[in-house]
Structures are given as structure tokens and as C-alpha cells.
Length: 355
Image (cartoon, rainbow, N blue to C red; front, side, top):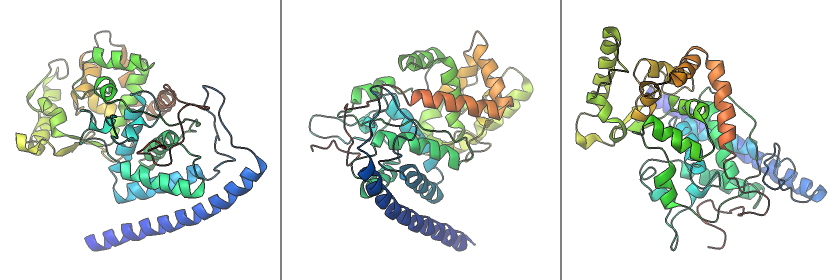
């Protein structure tokens, strides 16, 4: 049975890839025709646009979407990984694909920073997408825009909302190792720390709570949450019934992270529906079952009670969560973007063009 299942997934992936290759052939022809009619489109200074590649690379989003489908079909965890790349990019220097740059010369890659090292993944998927787009539309689609589109498509493949992506970002000429260590939220952040961190990016408390819902998919290493196993916060667990449920939750985590030698073992951020983008993350928070400390502080450290109200709203209304998430991730995708003649369009997402 297992071999049949593997054969099905392998065949499906091959069929998807063949369809995608035919799509690229069409894209090349369309792009040549469009560029005969119009000069290369650029965004207004400081602004992003919908349908930015309508004339210069009309099938860009479809190519990216097909490749994301293939990647998630091969590895369901990849959806969360691709979404996370967009977050980790935007929180350092802005949404400019600086997170994709490898170390070169005096520049140290953001991949080497503490929050990213042995943690973020999906770079090979981005490489494949970029290679195909370069074949269809050379030096046209930025790596930063690829990350924004990939995040949308990754959410959609897991049952989440789909939204229009504003495009026209250009790629950074530098990375910031120090910025990655400073601005990417830690898994044990306090609520005040999270609020301050998001505020530095121009995001408010409502954005914080909505974007935290991305933890409805994906996994985390034991090292990121091991303190949760033996620590009980009386604010989180204020009734005997809730304590019993929480104790069962801790036993589950303990079975995964039984000793220090298993720090790299993985546990789902949402134990109930780990592979589906839904509102169970917020239900988990209300039961004291958020995996990371930085998740649970949304409830346990909210002295004013306003955040808890928002958590309750999302826990009881998935459509409301989806609407809020879309608004906040679109807002996040506008952080310090490079447009017009700023930066460049990288040919290889790992290197700036003059290397």
C-alpha cells in the first residue's frame, strides 16, 4: 500500500511538472509578443501594483503556483517553510529577498543568523522557480516578488485564503546578519517584546495576532519549546479540567523531546490539524496548548484583555481570521520595499548580479 501511495505522489508530481514545462513554453511566446507591444513595465516610485507582470511575464504567477503545488505534494511541510521565508525576509531590511543571499566576500548571509541557522528551508524550491522564470522571462521577475507569491500559494495549498499579491518589488544588493539576529522574533519572546518587534516593522497588535496564526501549519524543533514541557503558567491553566487537558498536552511533548539529545526533533505547531491552514491555532491558545512560548504569551501576558478578545474572535470565526490574516500579510509585504530603479532583479536569487 505504501509503495502504491508513493507511486501515486511521484506520478502526480511528474504530471504537474510536465504541465508546468508546457506552461513555460507558452510563457516564452507570450512574453516575446507582449514585449514587442510594450516597453518593460516598472512600478511608480514607492508603489506596488496588481498585475505588475501582465505584459512582461504574463504567466509568472501560474508558473510559481504550479511549482508550489509540486513542492508541497512532495513535502507537505514545505508549505509552512515557504510562508516562513517571506516573514523572515520582510522583518530584516524589508521585503527585498535579502534572506536568500548566500555569504559572499565580506557579506555574511542572513541564513547564518541564530533565528535562521538550521531552521529556515525551501531555498531549493525558490531556486527551481527562479530558474524556470529566467527561462520564460529573463531578468524580469524579482526574487522578492517570488517570495510574496510563494507565501500566498503555500497558504492556499493548505486550505487557507487566497489573495491578490501586489508586485513590483526589486531585490536587495545586501544582506544583514545582525538585522536577522535582532529583528526576527524569538520562540520565547515576551508579549511586550513581540509588540515592540512588530512595531519596529510598522505592524500593530492586530497584525501581530493575525500573523501569529501562520503557526496553524508547520513544525518546530524541541529546542524551541522544551521549557513548555515542565512549566505550568497558572494564568494559562486556571481550572482543573483545563489542567488535565494541558497535562496530556505536556506528556505528548515530553514523548517527542525526552532528552537533550533530541533537541532537533520536530513537533507540529498545531497538534489538532497540523497540515491544514485553519483557526485551530487560536483554539489551542485558549486551551493553553500553543507550542511556543511566544504563542502563549498572547493570552497569558495580556493584562488588558484586548488581545484575548481578538483570539476569541478568531477561534470562533475562521472567516474573520482569514480576512484579518490577508490584510496583515499584504501590509507586511509592503515593508521597506525596493521599487523603480532601486536594487536589481537578480538572475540567481543567491547572488547579486555582479558576482
